[in-house]
Length: 432
Image 1 (cartoon, rainbow, N blue to C red):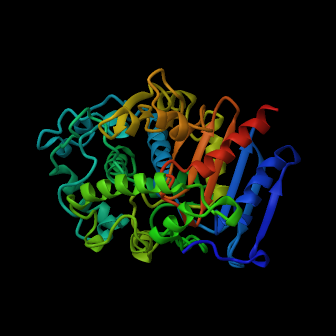
Image 2: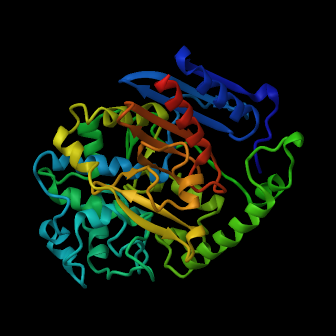
């Protein structure tokens, strides 16, 4: 597995402002060097689109700037935006206990869980103790029958051995969506609010009748490709930045993570026996049944154009999408939470605000992972990134809205560092 296209398969098209030519050059190099298969990059600065590029290294003539892809956890920022829009209508406070707005949630010891606890991955609900029978339970009509809500109501909290922070990979969005439909005057879900109130072409959650709204196929990097690349020198055509020692360390660490995950029930019944680092896992999240579901933390679909436009709105304090007060509250009180292994060398710090977006900035207690990977090249940005490569973030000080979306999912860099390099180049250009 890997990028096996010839030079004749390379194509890059779109627009790039002359001031940002170095961004285009680096993206072209990524494609030509075989680090990507298909990719989109869109950037706004000062409300103006300065980069709108797409490319293929495998001769995929069907791929273009409008192609929609699953963006996985990058969608967590969009669920935060939907909630902030409701905050602007005076419907809740982030410090509210969830049970205030959803009484049934307060069962089994969850009565004191706050909205901001969920947004900061500190609610004790990072995974569910029972499997959701089918992804069809996440379809809009099933959500409104409370099929997901009832399961959440019956859950008990479980925390890591140290601290409260544990990444809510898939659960966060389901909890927030249940809260959203109870807060919204029309009882709408996040997907419906996105369609009716946000109305940005190129961003979807749940079923859509719009042409081109289904996700394109994606490819998961394989273990054999990682191993071969770890032993390939630069002069022989190394495609991804990974060293043999680092690979073995990551494989051992990832195996430990997979071992822990294997002790948890599969999230959906259809995922029984399917590993998270497999092509089957990716195919499931790009399947027609899953595309109809609303799993906000995992299965937003989008293209870079739509995501960058929304990120630009957020870089400019909400621009009419929400009140400035709501924007400020959503971005307020980032709180450091330690995540990772038992030693400082294996730990890093989440820094989620009360409204659920991460503020990328090294603290006084920054670890090696914080400095060299997690925050590197993206200090000053807010937002998040998605499994395998996608990034949707914004930089309020420089008024940058940034979106990078690849089809080649590279899990050897869990913090999406290849896209972060582009984020830094954009910053350098904006400041020049």
